[in-house]
Amino acid sequence: MGGTSTDVSRYSGHLELVFESETSGVTIQAPQLDINTVAAGGGSRLFFCSGLFVVGPESVGAHPGPVCYRKGGELAVTDANLLLGRIVPSMFPKIFGPDANEPLDVEATKLAFDKLTKEVNAFEMLQQETRKGYIARHFTPEQVAIGFVQVANETMCRPIRSLTEAKGFDVRTHVLSCFGGAGGQHACSVARSLGIDTVLVHKYCGVLSAYGIGIADTVVEVQESRLVDYDNANALQDALESLERLEHQATKNLESQGVAYVSTRAEKFLNLRYDGTDYGLMVQEPDDGDFKGRFIDDYQREHGFTIPNRRVIIDQTRVRLIAVASTGSGSKLKQGGQHTPTEPVAISQTYFEDVGFTDVDIYNLPLSPGMIISRPSIVIDSTAGVTIVIEPSCTATVTEDLDLEIHVENRANASADKGMAGACWMVVFCVAICFVTEPCYRLLPSKQKARIS
Image (cartoon, rainbow, N blue to C red; front, side, top):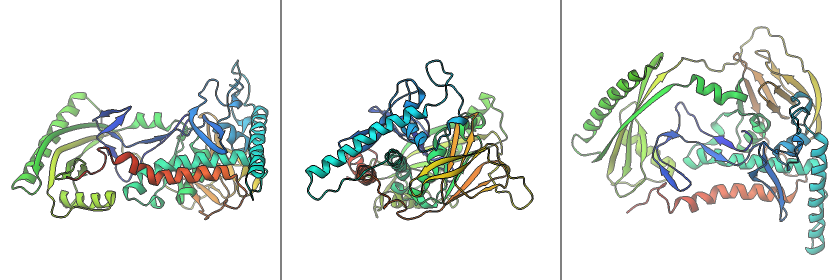
């Protein structure tokens, strides 16, 4: 999560790829990571429109930026987090204002939310006057701010569900790995909304994209087009021979680039589809070599049905040759042994929807391996502009590699009775219901799902 958007991808032992995408109406046929993006970032603008809380898609940008940037900007998600105490101004560099030498402006944010809260309460009074039986509620600026944060969180949940539940995977079995300057401010809330119980925050989460591209593997992809019935005599054998040729070709391409690597591995795919449909699945070679069986299983998981007695067509053979840059190491919890707990550098007040304002410990990265944080806290890396909020009922453990592993206790309907604005919950409901209905509208006329003839 950054300033203007949140990007989401799924990893389950291998990278999830798409081989055809559409941008601004233009179809692009090229292998790329399957990344879903929504306009919900720290700079997403906050609106109160027709009685509803709206976050984005407009962004206030870096200039003028949010109200707290001291450049005459509009309210944004960053302002909401600042008002709630989830951003600690004293831990931020003084780079704001016209001369880029001032701290974040908390007072300006408070005044802007006071004004917006008056609009919300005025709307409530109008509803009481014009709607029989309606009882107006009075909201504080903090309740309004947390309402906008919850709308932003639900917006971020939407692409995660699209990459998991919409494809037949149980989102609750996943770990939420967050990065970006703003990701740690929302990770616990997003995980709780999704039913995920573990959040992983990399030690370089503020610059993880740059760090990742620096250590990324080199990949060469080659493919051949085919159009043959999977069950035809010698069809599978011909496809396997094609995969062998493609692997040899990819190896030559890699060697010609002079890339330094530790080892290579080849991932082999067949693009399969049912005869009479135009939606195929790229099936990676299974251990037992049964491409067709894997295709039927994947099709059932993603679509909810299969087509018995229908021919399966091989459309394409493809090989991804991966030159592994380094062996790397996993993030492991430190078991036993002695460690020196890192002491908090300060104590601050942060607002949470269930408890209101409460004291939180402020820590600076790096923390000590094996250290456990079992109370509401904020962890800051001021050099990378990262703020990680550890919410109530969450416990964070520092791994051997200095990453943070946060256990999130999921509580059903934790804040449903806390008097949150109906305008907020209406938008949260609409975002959630759109997750169910939008794919039907978006995919029926397109090539992204199976059309059967």
